[in-house]
Image 1: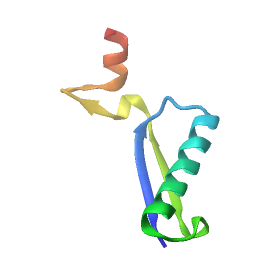
Image 2 (image 1 turned 135 degrees about the horizontal axis):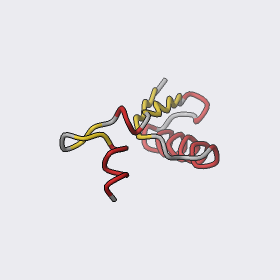
Image 3 (image 1 turned 180 degrees about the horizontal axis):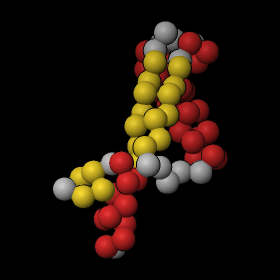
Image 4 (image 1 turned 90 degrees about the vertical axis):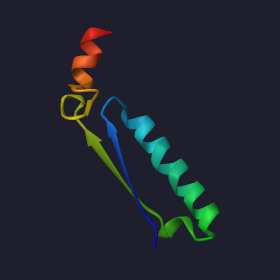
Length: 65
């Protein structure tokens, strides 16, 4: 049973999360030759202030943009 854990900085809405789960499930099942019902997906939504790149949080980068 495949388990996918995807971490991303939170900006998505509920519809986008549902779309991501569906697409990851379909693609994983196709590539691995398994049933979609056996694919598990965990979305790990990280607050932008807790995700850093280049020495600053994404929230800080957002404010500078």
